[in-house]
Image (cartoon, rainbow, N blue to C red; front, side, top):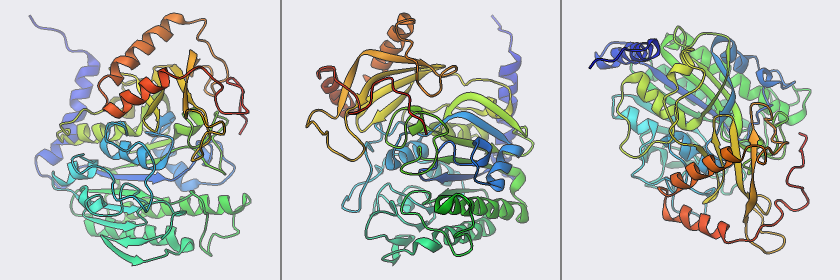
Amino acid sequence: MSHPISRRTLLRGATAAGLAAPLARGQAKPLNLVMIYCDDLGYGDIGCYGSPIPTPNIDSLARDGLRFTDFHSGNPVCSPSRASLLTGRHNTRVGVPRVFFPRDNNGLPTDETTFARMAKNNGYATACVGKWHLGHKHPHLPTDHGFDEYFGIPYSNDMSPRWLMDGDKVIEEQATLETLTPRYTERAVQFIEKAKDKPFVLYFAHTYPHIPLAASARFRGKSKQGLYGDVIEELDWSVGEVLRALDQNGVADHTLVIFASDNGPWYQGSSGRLRGRKGMTTEGGMRVPGLFRLPRVIPAGRVTNAFASVMDILPTFAAMTGMKLPGKPIDGVDITDILRGYATEAERAQPFLYFDGWDAQCSRAGKWKLHFARRNDFIYSPSPQGGPKTLALRPPELYNLELDADESYDVAAENPEVVKRLMAQTEAMLAGFPEEVKAARAKVLATPTGPSEPGRLPHEKVAN
């Protein structure tokens, strides 16, 4: 018995065939990827998301491409978010529940496949420039995970010694903070010039605006928003230099450029009136800028309210190029139809989970976000009462993010069936996660109900 083919299915097939064909036939212009990832940049820190800081080059990605209003990082802190971006998997699946420090000898497991490894296996040149933060020793360096070359600080700039590395060699014991953005940018541009005649992936992971802040002499004192503004304006300049390099080397028309952040703002910056900041599983900790540009494929000047996350990048890039996905379960989905304007939402079989360490705290399905646990202490600090880090919320809190993006109004009581359904879906999903996740969940369920975040009421609205 035959079944009619919908227009959407036909368009999806045509999209995949049209983009994958050049790679499959060995033609001259397969799809390149430039992933620009800032550190601690908040949802409200750039112009096209409402910031007073001028960011014309970053804003051009929105003008010439697609701007997401509901784009998420993989986690509210650095290392876990990067693990999710690179693998398309929840950070707890890949064994990265927390931030790595220079004292650590571990990192992203060697059996995980990054989008760089996937591309390299398909003949791509690959480079990582900037912050890595997934292990600073072999076998956890970028060059162990599919990148041909690496230049940057392997962890956060507030950690010591502040190594600057080229490949697997330390070239400076204490990197000069004021010159980081220009030096990163120079290396990124050099890679584009060198790789222009072959397919390439550039992962450009800026150190800033993670503290301590620093800007070059060219930008210091330039912004009306102080040093933070200076740093953002220099990041914007850097984006402009990368875009200019793509144009000058004739590769802009077949290069997918993505701009995002690893989590919400920390001590400075704006979460755009969303509740919370870095380290929190409220929207301000994980909802970040999300800009996508690909001429003649992504229609210019569009804005979408579709939910998406950094975990969608690997499966989307695979779909666009015809590459085979890694064998392990991928939590992200192909969002090509959203990018092209053929769909308003992506089809997702499972909820999106919000983790703090090994602890699952929230889940998201469509417009609904369910909070079922919450941190009982502040980031990087022990609980003031000496109690458990995470407490179960009884009853859970439910938010309709279409109407209440800042999570001010708990509507669980009015929607008991939604709470029941989403909680059941979440528990079923967690049953397939590592033992550490299941053990953490059992521990949380065994804790008594208590106040979350000392000094703050559960429903207190936070102004940013």
